[in-house]
Amino acid sequence: MIPVYKPYLNADVLKYAYDALASTWISSKGKYVIELETDLTKLHAVDDARTNTALTCCNGTAATHLIAKTLKQFHPNIKKIIAPNNVYVAAWNAFLFDGCFEIEIVETDPDTWNVDIAKLYEVLKQSNLEETALLVVHNIGNIVNVPQIQRDWPDLVIVEDNCEGFMGKYEGHNSGTLSFASSISFFGNKTVTSGEGGAIISDTKCQRFLYKMRSQGQSDTKFIHDVLGYNYRMTNVQAALLKGQLEHIDEIIFKKNKVFDLYRELLLPVEEVSFQKSDINTKHSNWMFGIKIVNGNYSDIESFLNKNFIDVRPMFYPIHRHKHLQGHIVHGGNDVAKTLNKECVILPSYPDLQEHEICHIVNCIKQCIANGFAV
Figure 1: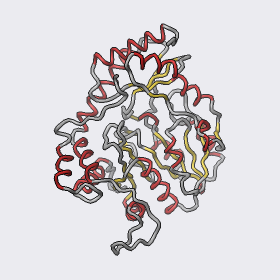
Figure 2 (figure 1 turned 180 degrees about the horizontal axis):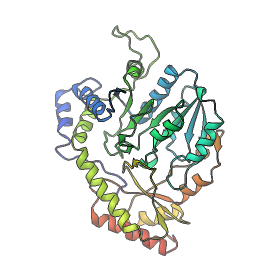
Figure 3 (figure 1 turned 90 degrees about the vertical axis):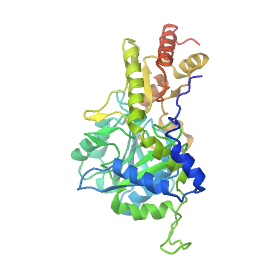
Figure 4 (figure 1 turned 60 degrees about the vertical axis):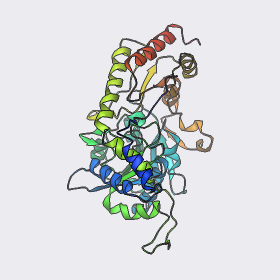
């Protein structure tokens, strides 16, 4: 079976992980946590006008939850979060954990698979921006042009779920760098991974609060905790794994770019297949390669590809498919979201995917279409 993802973990990448294990510092204490936060801070630097700092945590969901906590701390008037449809459920859940926010959903753009900007702007016109924040999600790694939204809506507070957008770009900046705060995931299928793991990127002014929330509400006195916090810390071994991969990030991205380019070259002539379209002045993170097959049915396509030893994933479901989220307002309806979920397929996208494997995947997709999706 060709898996949908395999992490890039060669011997050179793993050297720091071996060192962390040998040191016996395997929990949240150890030098690699500090070194990784330094590396991520450098990676997300902008300019002298804004000082970003990275803080690691145990996973991307925890990182997004910490953003929600920090948003309420620094913008206590905000009550409503406007969020996109068709995203991984953690993006919504993280803002509902504490009962501080109501969520309103805006329908998906059929071309970008991100939030429909025109519909979003109509919703913003009707919103009290003093009580509203926007959650941007870079779906499947396709980057939303956050700086453009900021220019159009300078009074709007924006946060980013950058869990799929890590290493993407908007207007020359790494995604996740220009909003109030952003979250990163290092889950097992991410471009850089420690199995689980995450990070928050925010202005330095937020870091003391974030650190306290992440670390059990620890005060300046050891074992005295003065607020209700969480154990959302990353381990030293996880950080070591990530540090090794970040030292090879250019190589990983080069390999993934080749995978994406070959898919596009081979599938471009297939008239039933279309790709995500990117916003102007953005660069896709090339996390996962997705295609939309006109009149396709994901269940049938998945069955056909699985029988040919290819592992795939569906596009994320509309919010109302989740029982606990059915009561939320969806501006613009669910029709686009339903269509994308039915017709989109997420293909194997890992750095070491070989050319002959990509050719096999593409040939099977062509055969599946020619057979009318018959299993």
